[in-house]
Length: 124
Image 1 (cartoon, rainbow, N blue to C red):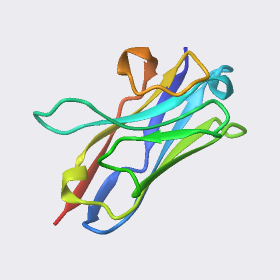
Image 2: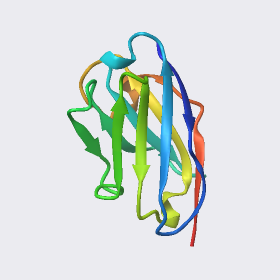
Image 3: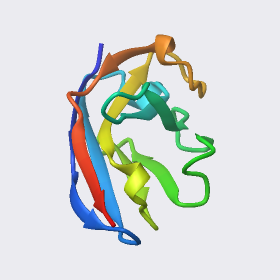
Image 4: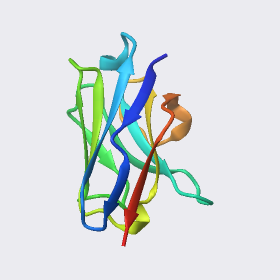
């Protein structure tokens, strides 16, 4: 399995930007697809974005499409989530997760490893 640690969360005003990072340990990072999910208080976990093993393919949830971008640097064992034009409804704990496959998925059941999460708060 891959161990994951997110960073970069914080408080930002609506319309602002944040970049989340997810540092991974484990030799398999560069061979697996990664994803981002979020969970707001009293709401279901929501798929945000996913990226395949080499960064050549990405997929986004409808609520963030056009505003968020995920990327990865396999040399640094890190995946990123660039969040622009943030809205108060983006407020949530953001988690990165690793699959055990090379292809993209948004199904949380297919993600084997999860980070501890980082809080993102967007004020209006």
